[in-house]
View 1 (cartoon, helix red, strand yellow):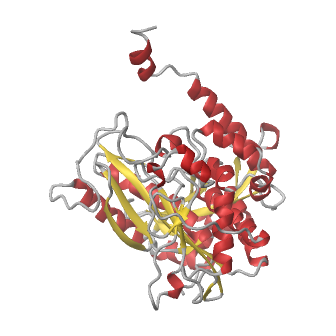
View 2 (cartoon, one colour):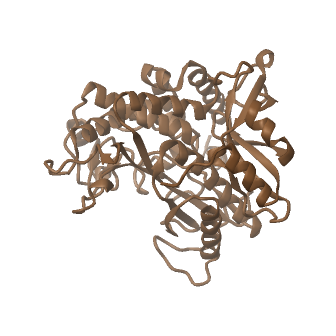
View 3 (cartoon, helix red, strand yellow):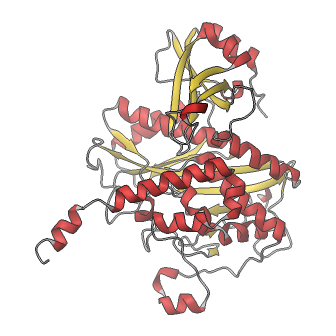
Length: 444
């Protein structure tokens, strides 16, 4: 295992690589990256005391009369930004957000994930390993979704600019210490995917933020636009963030059992049942935008129905087929999150829901291996198959009833998130859309 960098390591690299500027990164409640820059001369002070800033203008952060906050850089996250000049190079570190007295700030979503990982450890698990698959689109500009290719799943298009964009993105990610498993064209035109190699949840949440920045930076360098918007094209597949996950005790996979026909341990079944049982109430966190629910519709490979299976890619949770000798690879794949979420919160609620299943020994229903889209509502009701929320407001209403999510997120973030999303829904529902004008104006 690679040794984590400490403050002395970072100071040495900064001197050796002629790093002149260091960007301090953190995210707001919605997962939007925030950053400010210090010079190398300020780095030791930043490590010792942190850097003060006004949190009152950051979404979900402090109120105006309690706005002083401190960004304390985490040296283990240091990396040099490869798309910036080598001379007078630019580094970056993720920060923990503290109150002036040095205690963690309850509005810091990175802290929320840390707290939930501590709860996990108290239950006897050492690692929550995650491997998300983030899909995204390349368009010619940011003002209109004009596609750049008409490729499909795994297509090889010799004249496809996406090849070079993905190649450069992977180079940059690897230079920053982020391991990539593979990349390919996705199902929809101009849609792509680069899969990150699994790692611990906190590191992966940092990696997801970095990945989104790198994808966009490479696109910008090449005069195009990359977006993680869940559903930018009508009638085509949207972008998901299928997330592979497992719990480990030391180097032993707590999800594996040799005695079960699915090779799932009791813990894995309880965890999966927890994610399924609480999926409606965590959906506003994993799918946080109005547009997220344009993706979560029947068809288009997006999960809508709360079922699990092995071969069923319409299922909410899929269990990849077991391969002999690959016990450590036993995992579940949660398929409903999208790549525009706040990963610190999304990973927290998926972990919290799964752990609740383990604590309360939720029973896992039988798997469903047929396409649920093609049976009637009556048949689904007879089988007891529930659906995810159909809109952001429905998801918010489910979230508001959830004591579990309030406990996972903490009251501050829970309340701020609900407040923000209600405003978003109101702003959306008051719009008069082109669809309404075209459909109703001529007949009403």
